[in-house]
Image (cartoon, rainbow, N blue to C red; front, side, top):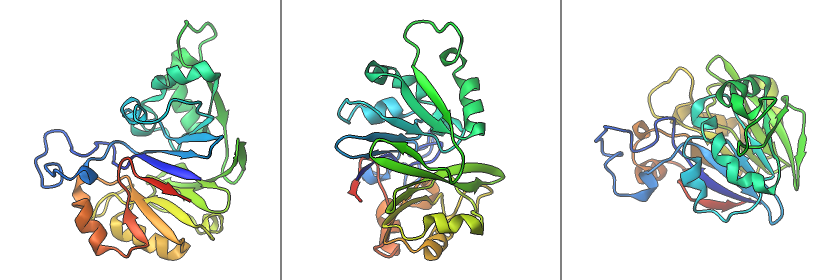
Length: 253
């Protein structure tokens, strides 16, 4: 399994518009963060996690081939705003998009023309699949189990791929009964927004504490704002089994 981090930033991206802080002004490419998204692939299956407003820019660097499924974590624009840019991939056939009930409703509101009874030619051919926590879905080579986490007061989905890999973003808290669905991982991707507390996102300290509960072999941190600090400095402060990911990074699981 190959995971490509298409974007590792928060809703504003890094650099943030109008900001001249040391992170936004950094010349280190690791400090440039597009909105959060990832590709999970084998030789025969390709799954996109979230399709935010930077999707077109992100996907241009990737080989053009079929997307077998799109997993939506939640119904916020920075995770769904690029859905219309899936149009070119519809030449391979209808695209299966998987989301919970709240995100499905959000997609109908955001892209009503995709679900009209008389769609005009050229709109993305999206087949929307409503999924539920703990109910495993199969997409090609992957058995994917949704796990519920809380984004402030909003229940959203993280995803576990088989036995070894899980991807969570925008989490603030998680119920104890969800934890068994995340034990035994080889690789975990999870959000760490910044150092200071936030009402709906984990801080870096929260993320490290969560890793201590789950105990994966390796953890990569995503959905980070400019307030977290410079990529190199944050990683130097962390143990080697917990590191910030960066845009364009590819890992093997």
